[in-house]
Image (cartoon, rainbow, N blue to C red; front, side, top):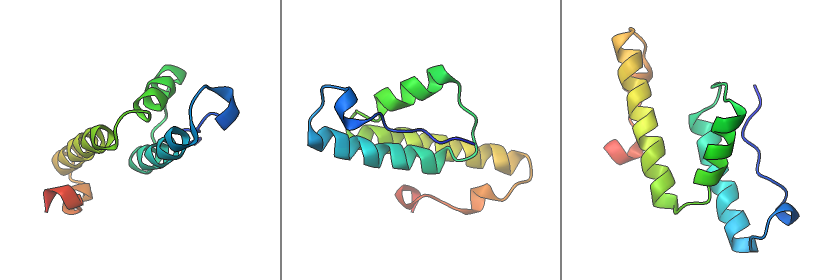
Length: 88
C-alpha cells in the first residue's frame, strides 16, 4: 500500500518552513491511515490538509482514531484498548 507522499520542494511556491511542517503533518497522517487505500482525490485533500495548522491536523486525526476505536470495539476488535495521549 502506497503512503501519502509530499510533493517535491521545488514543485510549488512554498517556503522551507512550510515544507518542513507539511512533511511532519504528512508523516502523522500516514501513521494514522496506514493500510487505508486512498483515492487520488482523497490524497489531494489530505495533502491540502497537511498545509494547515498543526493543531487542526492533530484534532482531525484524533477524531479519526476515536472513530476507528469505536468501530473496532463494536466489531470485537482490540484497537479501542489503545487511547491516544490526548484522551488520557
